Image 1 (spheres, chains in turn yellow, purple):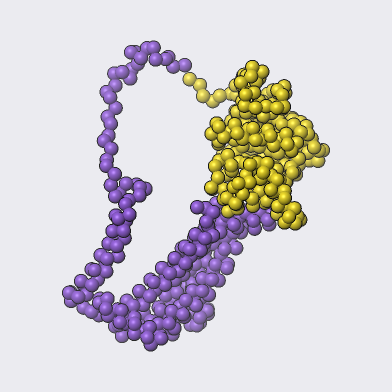
Image 2 (cartoon, one colour):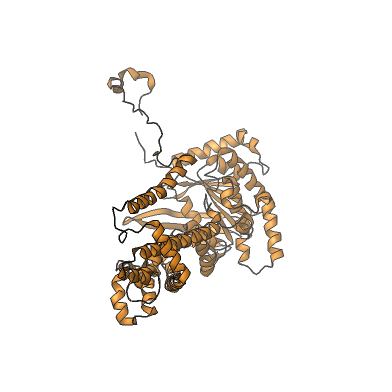
Length: 257
Length: 285
C-alpha cells in the first residue's frame, strides 16, 4: 500500500489574493513506514494531510494510494486531528465503534474488534465514559483507536500530541510507537516538534515555509526499539540538531528586529 | 538585537515616573461571574417574589386603587377557584393548549427539518435565508385580519397565527445551532467512511439536538403569547377569550386569575423542556 504524491500543489484565495500553500511536493510513503513531516507554521503541513485524507483536492499534481488516485475521504486513510474531533455524545466505546457501525458487521464481531483496540490503546477502563470526562491524552487515544479500528492502509496524524503536556506527550509517543510496531500500520504524521519527529519516525521530511515545499529528507537510523532514554543518546541528539537546523534554515521568519 | 541588561543605566525608561498602581476593590455581590453565598442567593430570590406580591397586597388593601382596577389577591384566588369549580377553566385551558400543540407543533415539524437543511447545505441557506429573514420581521398579529379573510373565524386561522409567529424564528435558530457543528467532526466522520446521509443522521442531528430543544423552548414561550393574542379576536373558548369576556363585565379579578394561570402553565412548559434538554444534552455537561 504505497502512498504517492507527485508534484502536488495547492493554491487558495485569501481576501482576493492568490496564495500558494504547497508547491510541487513529491513524496512516497512506503508500506510499514513511519514518516514524519516537520515544518514551521505556514509550511502547509496540515494542508498536506488534508489532501491525503481527501478532504480537499489539490490544484495541481496527483496523489495515489496503491496506484489509485484519491478522490475523497475514506476509512483506508484514518485521520487524527490535534483536538476536538470526538463525538461528545458517544461513550468511548461507541466513539471507537463509529466506523464499524457503518459496515455490515454483527454485534459480536464489532465488539471483538472494538475491545481489541480499546485494550491496545489502554482505554478498557474508561470504555463507558464520555469524552468530556477524559484527560487530553485519553481523548487522543480514543481518536487513534477510532481511526485504527477501520484498519486503514495509512494512519494520518495531524499534530496529534500538540495540545498535550510534556509528560502525557511522551506517554503518547511511546504508545504510538508501540501501536505502529504491533499493527504494522503505515503512519504519516505531521508535527512542528523535531524531537518528536526524530523519536517516532523511520524517516523525516522537512517542509520549507511559504510556500510549503520539500526542503530535505533524511532517514532515521535509530534502532526500532526506542525508549525515552533514546532521546538522550548522542546519535539522537545529533540527528535532532541537524534537522532543527534544516527547519530553521528553511523557515522564513516574519519577525525581524 | 536589543542590547542586554548591561547598560540598564542608559535605558531611557529609567527617567520615567513609576507606573501608578490601582487599588483592587473588595469583592461584592456584584463581582462579575463570581458565585455568591447560598444565603444571599436565596434572599434575593425570595425578595424578588415577595416584594411585588407585598406591594400588590398593600396597594389593594389600602384602597388607594379601586378594586375594579386592582383586585386583591384574595379576590383573584376566589375568582380562579370559581372558574375552576364551574369547569370553564379546564375547558379554556384545554382549548388553548390544544391550539398551541397544533399550531406550534406544526411549526416545529416544519422548522426543524428546514433549519437543519439551511444549516447543513449552503444551497439550503441560499434558497431560504432571504425569504425567512424577511418574513420573520412581519408581526404575526398583523396577519390576524388577513388570516380571518383567508381562513375564516374558526380554528384554522388561530393555528395559522401561531404557526406564522413561531415557524420563522425556530427555523433560523435551528439553522444557527446546526451551523455550530464543528467542521472537524464532519470531516473526521467522512474519513471513518460515513456517507452524506450518515453524517447528517449520526453526527449533525445528535450534535444539534440539545440546541434545537433550546430553540423550541424559547419559541414555545412565543407560541404561548401568540395563542392568547389570537384568542383575543373572535373566539368562543380559550384563555384569551376568557380575558376579553371578563373585560366586558369589568371582572378584573377574573382577568388576573387567567393571567396567573397563563403564567403558571408557561413556567410548567419551560421546566418540562428544560428537563428534556438536560437529559438529551447530558453529554455536554
